[in-house]
Amino acid sequence: MNLTLDQITHRYSGMPVLHEISLEIPAGEILCIVGPSGCGKSTLLRLIGGLEKPDEGQVLQLGTPPEGCLNPLTYVFQDFALLPWRTVGGNISLVLEDHGIKGRAADAIIDDVLARTKLSDFRKALPRQLSGGMKQRVAIARALAVNPAVMLLDEPLSALDAQTRELLMDDLLALWTRAPFTAVYVTHNLNEAVRLGHRIAVLSRRPGRVREVVEIDIPLAERHSGLARLDEVQAHLWGLMRDEAMAADQELLDV
Amino acid sequence: MSDATLPGEPRATAARPVPFRGGGFRPEAKRGVGLMVFVVLLLVIEWGTRAGWIGNLTLPRPSDVGATLWDLAASGRLWEHLGPSLSRLAVGSLLGVTTGIAVGVAIGLFSYARAGLVPLVAAIFPIPKIALLPLFVIWFGIDEPSKYALIALGTFTPTVTSTYGAVDNVDRTLIRMGQSFGLSWWSIVSKIVLPGALPGILSGLRVSLAIGIILLVAAEMLGAEYGIGAYVLQAGALYDLERLFAGVVILSVIGVLVSWLIGLAEKRLLRWRG
Image (tube, rainbow over all chains, first blue to last red; front, side):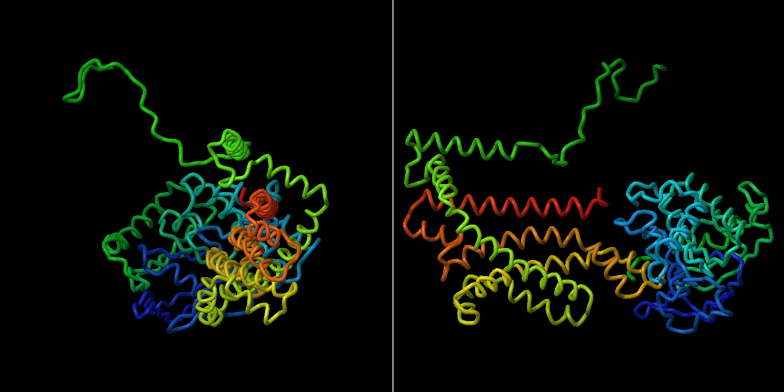
């Protein structure tokens, strides 16, 4: 299933936050969206997944989601969004219950996604007992449980410390290599973008427009930190964003 | 160590530990202290009444109050009073609390309910419900229903207020998450909103039920032969301080028990908070 963003413009109480954004999200690829803070990247992600309606333009779904897909557009949130009163297993079963998947069928799915995210031993743990990195792995497991056609990741590693972020990036890469998924990955961290993105869309500061879409032709599995080509791309991205980021930093927030 | 020192600093100062400035602001559970306070207070009053520096019209002797309580229990009349009172409190507050939670959740979820009912609740809240007792007697008769109604109305308003506050405080990102996974409206309410509001609802219950106990006495002012409230009011009318205090002690014990029960419920239902 492919997604197409067609001329999306969005305003918050008259103030334009996104301006005529057009992007392609082909199946099996990770599209990273980077931009200075306040450029509307998280808003764009909410529009893509249908949590908000764009003022103009539309998000189009091409083709049908694959068989067994319970929730075609599935989010992973920055702050994990786990129910603190449910165990790890309970948090995953939450998204299955509404589809009538209970008992043994649910157990099989939960066991599978927990194994894929290396959480099998923590099925009965409560979120408060887990570290930030573990919580985000639970959230990723929950997203995998509904077998999404497109994963929408909203700064999934931004709440984590640098080491955990590195580990989770490896986990995401491993997950993708084993079973390629389609994803839109919003981040302000350029290093994450060059490690995980097949293509990287750079947004300008508010109102966000697409400044450039950078394509990286190195397969994800071969990317590691210190690769000269990646550093080059990262420097190029930073060159695009530097002045914008500086200007964005000095803007008064009155939205 | 080099002997380079910062300007203005004496060369060889004696080492001393950095003074501790942290700690505090974190009350801990201390077992038995609450009981100690009670015991000491009672002993002081006992001593004062025996020694004479507390007149016997100022405060009754705690041992006399104890004896009155003992007589009350031994003669079986305690249950005659306690039974009707507890059932009034249970029925009245059950009615008030359940409708209060239902209305509070509705206010928390629906714009029209909020716009329409919040001013109404704000208007009802400050009315001294005791003043409405004659009205309830006309509406519901002098028997039990008017007492239920008074306690129900009294517990209703604080429950509504705390419930919709609790619903408002449920983490919106969790609700957004539920929507993003395509959960039905009912699933979001029952699995995300209600459990998320439960801590606030339970702590609101403490206030509501305390108000319920206060109103229990008021409800027994009219047309009640038995009941702790009736007992206290009769004793008060006769200036029988021993019996008055015996009744007050029973009311306090009911309050402590109710609060303890809510604490127990919190411990069981909110285990996830740790």
